[in-house]
Structures are given as structure tokens and as C-alpha cells.
Image 1: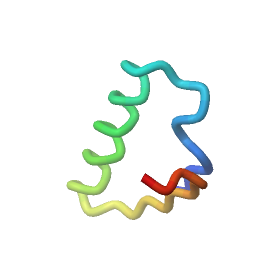
Image 2: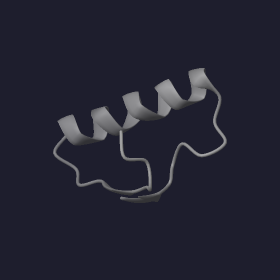
Image 3: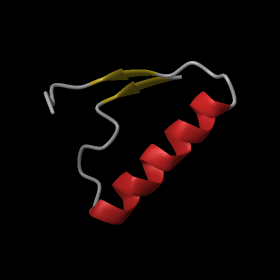
Amino acid sequence: MFLDKPTTGLDVEARAALWRAVRTLLAEGRGVLLTTHYLE
């Protein structure tokens, strides 16, 4: 899955839900490519 700046414009709860979904995909052995300009 390719996600380009996936959390831009999301509120705190939606952002947390998105990261939970990404972690679930990773735990299932799926590949996720994230692009962002956040350096944290």
C-alpha cells in the first residue's frame, strides 16, 4: 500500500485510528510505503 502524507488534515482521533490500521497491516505481513515531510 502506498500512502502519501496519510495524516494530513486528520484530527487526533482519526490520526490514531489510521496508525492503528497501518500497524495491523504490517502485523499481517503486508507492505506499507509512507511518504511524508514530517521529520519527527
